Length: 95
Image 1: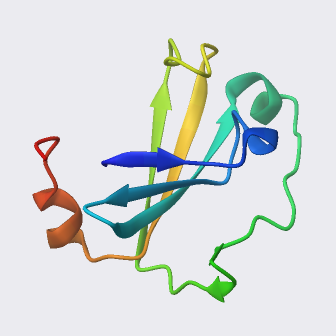
Image 2: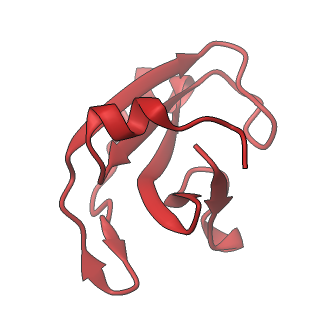
């Protein structure tokens, strides 16, 4: 997904902006499994970038049972893409 950008005050849960070759790819939010199981609600999740409302093309939700660096608890990664599936799937980790 390329680079990840965020306001440190919003980490680890987001919004996190994924950027590939200078282009915004998605906005990511992370929800802990514990919070979700406890019935926690999340309101006013934003889909704005540089002050512009974004058109969300599709979303992916992935469960990470062991977490990952930066958010080491079991959680869900929610990616809200502003590009199409074909473009999303074509992105590689190569520069």
